[in-house]
Length: 200
Picture (spheres, rainbow, N blue to C red):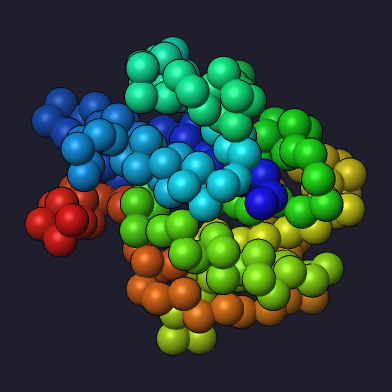
C-alpha cells in the first residue's frame, strides 16, 4: 500500500473555548482514543505507511504516539512523525514537510480532523490507481483521502507554502471514487465535534 500523509499541524482556530483559547482538534477524545489517533489508525489498518505532520503544540500531539499502542508501528517504520516549525504559514507548508519523506510511486493525503475516513476508502482509491488525483467522494463532491502521484512532488515542493493545494490540484487530471459520507465529514467547530461524538 502507498504512503499516507496526515496533517495535524494547524491552530484549530474554529474550535473556540472560554477565554478565546482554541481547543486543539487532534487531541480531542474520540472512539476510545483521540481524533488524530483515529485518523492514523485507519490509514495503518489499510496497510499504509503513515507520515504524520505536527506543528501547533507539536510535542503534545507527537507524544500521543509514544504510547505502547503505537510502538510497533513506529518500530517497524510504518509511522513517522515530522514537525513543521512554520505551521502558521498554512496547510500547504505542512504538506510540503511531509511529502519530502514520501517513498513509492504515489501517496495518500488526509487530515487528522476526519475520523470517519475508514480503511476501505484507502483501498477503494488504490484499486483504481492511475496517474491522476484520485479523490474519495460522496454525492459527486470531492473529499478525502486523495491519492496523488509522487511524480508531482517536486512541483508541489516549489509552491508557495502560503498557497492552497486545492489550486494546484485544480489544474491536474482527476478521478472521483464514491466512498461514502465519511469522505466529506471533517470536524471544524464544537458543533461538528458534538455531532461526531454522538454518532461514533
